Image (cartoon, rainbow, N blue to C red; front, side, top):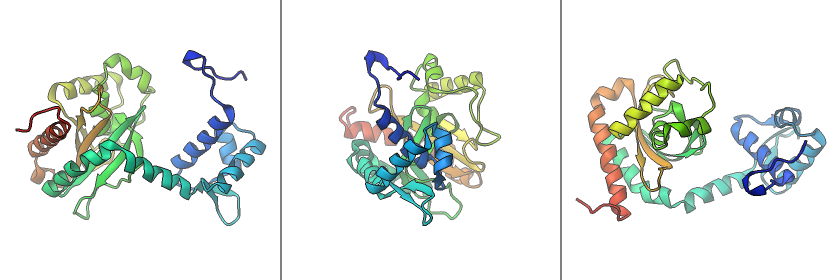
Length: 261
């Protein structure tokens, strides 16, 4: 197979590409994976993959089970992920805003970033209630099935969606919007109203509200507040949306984009 050539004539280094593909495959799997499974999924010869895994294990990027036959991420991956969050200016800038939303509502609050067709959680404040949304920092979810993702997809023109999303879209619950026309109509409503909602589209029983944080054009980050349907009446949609809008104004003021009221 001829090497892939990217715009500008750049050809990726094959060994580096394979190493990164292994890391991404291990990160995407909740369980350790076997050599045979990885070789089949990544279309890498087992002999080559074995050498990659041994090298990565020697450097702490990969760990194996006691039998030496199944592989998962090593502690170096955690260290690099933690360093990314520590050095990210947006995570630091929005920390106080997330804290304020958490104190005001006692519900789950997220900061998410658009990564292609997905949302990645960068920061989280836990709900004070036993009944809550399960999530983890670093978790990746389809953007179209989350309020965070829809808030950020709406920042892009409709003709850019085909370059981001792969049709047909996966449905995470029976409520997930997967029809292209319906999704485009919903994104138009997000642009009009300034916030996005997912009504049990990511997790049944959970409604989430989100607004984009305009620190870039188009925005790449958004904040959200998730509430179980059973408690939504007490929190009130209008209160949540108003609080998210105030939070965005606070961020803009802190960056000098707005004069504080």
